[in-house]
Image (cartoon, rainbow, N blue to C red; front, side, top):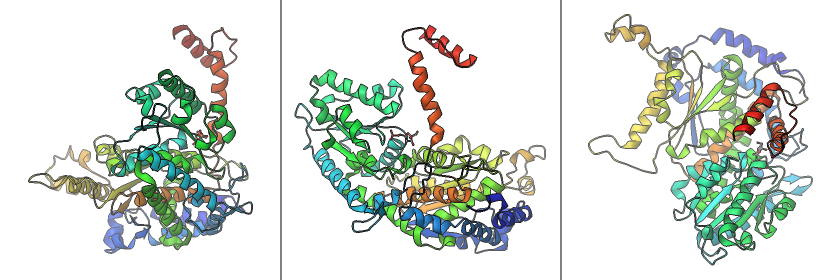
Length: 544
Ligand SMILES: O=P(O)(O)OC[C@H]1O[C@](O)(CO)[C@@H](O)[C@@H]1O
């Protein structure tokens, strides 16, 4: 990258522009343009994005698009999509988009078309999934599998559990699905206590097959199984693996015939549509899974071909940059108005924060600007009764993404009143309206509020929101929604000139934990840490 970001003409133009528009109110922007609500919207892969309630003028958008162009966004996007090794610190291609490429497409890594391998694994997964779903895959004692426990962490857990919860409506309900991630033994114990080992299948999901938490949980799961079934041979009927590391899988005792592979060009947090999604495929079936992949692919195509100014991930990314870097917003709230998407914010935390939580540029220079935001959120309407107060009237600017669906999957009429879904949707529209337009002091006083109470009742408004509206939460819609955020994160990484595809920041803690765990063993160790860590270790040893 040539000039540092903040020294580019595009950045400086934005900075100057920011000074002139920073106090402009959404009330005035809407008053000046009756068409704004429809004009500032875009559509792609079945998702409608309303970005009119953002503190932007047409000029802001033009300048943000100039910034994207000045960072060679289109060339960088094409480099990713064509399999160039853009993950420079790990020397890897970044090709999660190949996971949803249709049969027959060609995507080369080191001169080799990877698409046929992707479909070969998908076909094996599908055959296995059908066997489990139809009760043909039998456990050691001849009983069909009725419970599936995915053991994994990070990208090997958050995607599967989020997507399973999101698509539960489509799941085969006589298959119990559980997800164990935490090395805290409570997780495994609580998730297995009511399961019958004879009918339980464990999927050990780990890209590296070395992750401490997953390996510990897998070993304890094996012990739980063998305590009931005795015979080591049971492992082959009750354990399968999803990994890129066949050697470690074999060493663990899982037959590699029962292993579903993926590739080093799939990052952990970008892997839920690889074999890492096996648990989801077991739940919703191969057809549902393929529909999900088609949704991902539809958004990939939109991202690859829509003009930047109508490109959903690009628009969302640039708006994020606008608040993050010019308004100094520290966080992004993601607020799905659908109970099925309860885990979506947690999933996005890894996707976004592990990708863009970086402090140096691609060529290793300390950045002179903010990079990735803190991502957080909860489903509406619950959050409204918890933290929205701060979003409405607090001193921090918190841009929000509202996500909602026109049709519910659980229509529940209320006798004599609006159905549940209308109540839910009314809240989406009301929240974004209140956040944007607020309530002025004269309006409060006109309601007859006592002058001394009036300031407490004022809503400043001008709180920016995006609304993503889709028709219905289906596997296809979910795929498109996930890909939307994947590409948004990519675009922001390009603007900030960081490597969105490594995660060295999680290493130090891992290494130290490996060292400390040895010091927690039987013999009193010589402790060489700082005085705080030494004291904590001693206190733990004395009291456990
Ligand atoms: O799938 P694995 O190799 O067990 O890794 C799990 C997670 O650990 C990390 O490497 C770091 O937390 C994540 O990126 C990854 O998703």
